[in-house]
Image (cartoon, rainbow, N blue to C red; front, side):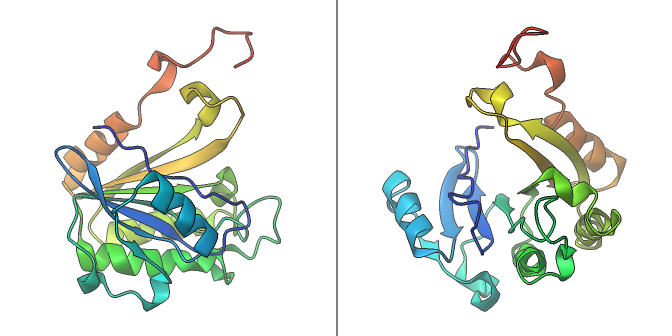
Length: 196
């Protein structure tokens, strides 16, 4: 599986970005991004892929069914650099609109990306809410912190990746864990003691 979704083009983005993918060639089918500048960047790199605006006003029936939904919600309220309003915050609370689209579309896979602060936000209740919501929607999950510098990006950029698998049961949880088990086998990891 090759999946290279766009990351937020601005640390001050105020909207969820999601992207629907359809296998087996994993081509992008649609994108959701409210910011006009970010939409222009997406249009430049992925011309012809339909763009949608405010996720809160979007109905899942408007979107083509996909196998994978990959996205992130604003980090400002869960980041250790923010005010820590958590998922109750106006920005990070957009996670629930994202979850509504997942519930409407029911893809086989879901990938959610955010900052590591999500793990400790709200005394760890916010991460629990994200994982619990995925569970309520029928997804078994695994999560892992990955650093972009280990994947060819010349900067340290740690992010939590949560993978939801609709397979169900222990097999679904194991399959999600296997996908995220890049560990030290990843070819981009620099040798010990060497800067990336």
